[in-house]
Image (cartoon, rainbow, N blue to C red; front, side, top):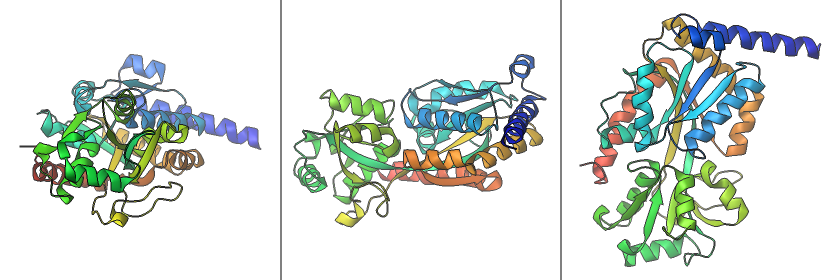
Length: 326
């Protein structure tokens, strides 16, 4: 019986793969039966980790048997976006997107739109920001950091992902809550949380804000110390205080999802949506959520379309209120 189930699962993966790649993906893609996922950021970052988790889950569950991940980092994902829009009509292509890219588009004056220039498929996860410092930092806890930030704002070198991303917004919100103007804040952007952490460990930064999944290994190794998680309430399995419980009204999360190129058919979009729906219901994906401390945030179809549209307005207003976008 188990052999029959494995055979059936593999056959379903091949059949779904062929269907997804048909009618508009190009002859070479059809013959290769490869689903390609673009992570528009460096290896080791949140988008890269999520893309690899998707690929692993699809293959392990037999939903899609040939999946590859590639990276095109830069400018909050907008460099990758500029290349991805050229793949119009190719239903064997997906790209990671999220909060960072929504903010990166106006900040980098990208001409592309996440509703009209690509096809929203599914929102998948959200990942809370964490404030971390080197293990030997003078900031023993978040109270130490807040006191120093109030006393001499420009003396602290903050870092995180790209300008205008969730990390930058986290620091901006913290500054606003402490009545510190953004022109006094030193924020150094990096390609991702992992890269910012490496810069901090190299002595270039004092404090980094990054998604928990990006810096979990560094936390567990003892290289860095967590000061706070920027969640609305305590998170199971993460032994860090929230800023809210410290009396500072700041919580920031970084949602992630996938889009396909523009120009795919309604049937191809439906198949990709079905693929993501089957994936998030699988045991392997639930293990990925638990292992990476991601929060499930699944939405597809019109719900995801409307969410992306609303994010453009909300994030732009937030960037302006924090004086990050002029």
